[in-house]
Image (cartoon, rainbow, N blue to C red; front, side):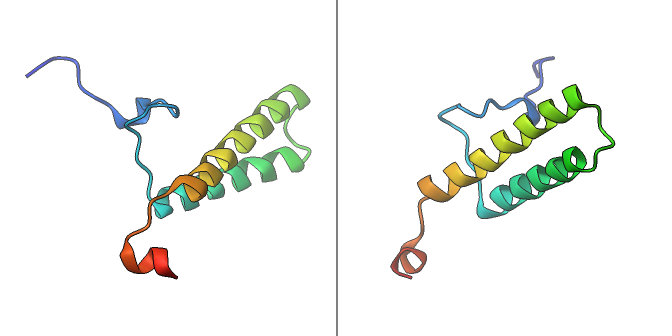
Length: 79
């Protein structure tokens, strides 16, 4: 066994091998919403709030890309 283990949390968002489910997209949206709430609270310093907002936007875009590019199985595609 190799001493270098693969870690799924190190996946790159632009990797051709990445696969997301609708559940993953939902979780991305929830994380984006949570970050957005933090930035809107006024309790986070502005530089950090800016970075959190950028991250929230990136997560929402990943979820949107999933919705746009996902492949639906037979009956789902017909709906």
